[in-house]
Structure formats: structure tokens, C-alpha cells
Length: 210
Ligand code: ADP
Ligand code: MG
Ligand code: MG
Image (cartoon, rainbow, N blue to C red; front, side, top):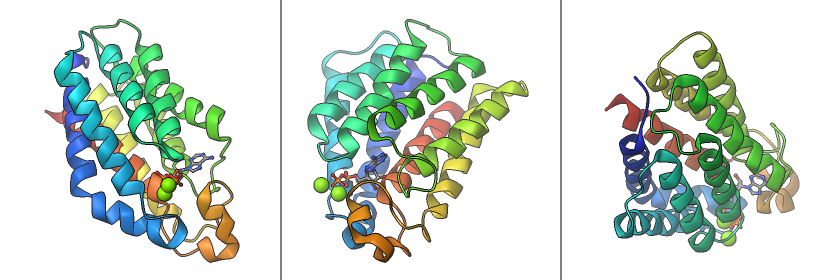
């Protein structure tokens, strides 16, 4: 069964719920290796996303993600705002005006999102950023789609891989973003952006599971 605008709206609604519920946790992750604002930034951004969706209900999943991108770019600030904004905008462009999203289109949208973050932030896997969650998630999604799995299974695979990817940042030394200023002292802490990515992709999977 393909995904539609209702899925996209539910994804964004569950994302806002997750950012609000994990606000303090994301702030605590950003404390030792950043400036303690990631949870605040993401919660504020996704509240703005919800407001935007309420004001003008989208007709397609692409339109919903584009609206989210605009809200995130204008409200999140910091490093994560433009990065997530670009991700959602690229995903929206990839989906176009499709009303029914199959597994291949979904995987393509996730690839586009990840590629947008890389184009903007130039991070590679192992740099201790959100890319350490996104890239394994995209790989798992592509693999699931290419073996004929449903969109909901594609997202479940992506979420699981993103969670493992976020954990994988714990021992890493940061080479991008604010945490890189700490050098070796950034090791031993989970990257907050990788943690929020895992939460957002889990929300996508939950929205698809219905
Ligand atoms: P800031 O660091 O400006 O306060 P946030 O705290 O909201 O912004 O977001 C920090 C997160 O942004 C990091 O945990 C990391 O995952 C991500 N990040 C920072 N720089 C980059 C980059 N160049 N590429 C990918 N992700 C990055
Ligand atoms: Mg920060
Ligand atoms: Mg900041």
C-alpha cells in the first residue's frame, strides 16, 4: 500500500510530538559537545511546522514536506535548521505531486533528503553528525525497497538503521559542526542531530504503520 498526504501529515505530527517529548534529552545531548539548544531548536521548529499545516492543509505529501521545510528553515536556526530544511525540501521535490508513494519513490525521497544534507554540510559517515544516522537509514531503505518490501517496512528498516547509526556516534571524534571544536573531548557522547534524526525516522515508520 502506498503512502499519501495523510501519512505525511501524521509523520510531521508524530515528529512534533517526539521533539516535544525528547526536548530535554536532546538538550542534554547537546550540552557536553555543543551549546545545549538542539532540543529547544527542534521543538520550536516542529511546533511551527504544525502551525503551518493547520493554516494551510497540504494536498500532497510533497506539499506537506515543503511546508515543513519552510517552517524548519525559518524557525530552527543553528546548524540543524538549514540542514533539516534542505532535507525536507529535497524530499518534497523528489516526491513531486505524487498522491500515492510506493517503496521506490519513498527510498528515492530519503536519498534526496540525505544528499541535500551532505550538499549543505559536507559531512561524511564517521564525522559524528546526523549523517551517521541518515546514511545507514538510506542504505537500509534502498535495500528494503529493492527486495520488494512495502513502504511501511522500508521506513521500519530506515528507523532501525538510524537508531543504530545514532548509537554509533558515541565513541566518535567530531569532525563537523560545533562539537568538532572540542577535538578528542567530543568522544564518549552521542551526537544530538543523529539522535533527532533517529526520532524523526521512527516517527515516519510509526505514521506508516498506522
Ligand atoms: P548548533 O550546533 O548550531 O547549535 P543544533 O544544536 O541545533 O545546532 O544542531 C547540531 C547538530 O547539527 C549536530 O549534532 C549535528 O548532527 C548537526 N550538524 C552540525 N554540523 C553539521 C554538518 N556540517 N553536516 C551535518 N550535520 C551537521
Ligand atoms: Mg546546538
Ligand atoms: Mg546553537
